[in-house]
Length: 284
Image (cartoon, rainbow, N blue to C red):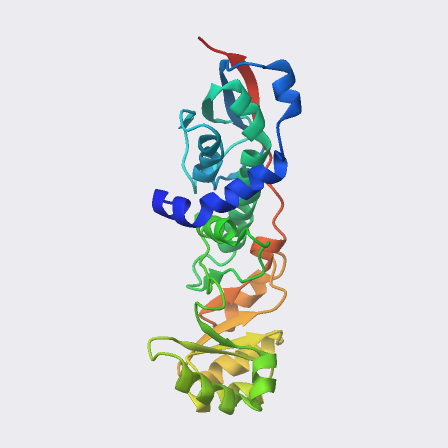
């Protein structure tokens, strides 16, 4: 995550997280450290995984004190091992203590997503299928979670509702039919925008192709139904399958022949990666 993105898109979110954790003061820290004391603490991984969110981790401390020094011995997307020393944070000990939980919350959560995404993507290796995330993200965490998916080897679907056209079942219901929904979308959106249609059966698939949809999502269909749909589409539109895709069932989707597989589980079901700040000590 580059510095411009951090300042324009992430800083206000990080500050809100800090305000949530420090509503007035860090009572525990101020009780034992009434004045600034320089110190250093080690960033240690407690289980194997893929690291993501190091810049966000660093930013937490630097928003509290710009003079905080953070040194990393790995980078986002790297495989890390249990007990590995991943970095050090040096500065006012009050800042190290007050920022610790928020910084680790971001890093653990993002690294958990990157690790889970990496494991799922490995199951599609050699298939040519792109693994996508969804909009099933934690409120106010989307920028961090979608970044973590990329760090883990996945790809991003549309970022938000302004980012692309996806005509889902309720859009189709509101328009009256797949054909009418696609026609209205083509009339409304700029020509540079692709139009994706969510389909649930072969009749909808055929209607979406005939209407000129660019991408056809095969949603919650059986393996056989999806194979039939891909054969019928025959390259006239890109194809995506979706619906309760997890690490446990994604391997069986490799042979369907779709271009993309999207999975909300990448962001909503990934466990954290256990990471700690340890061995805090004073320095001269």
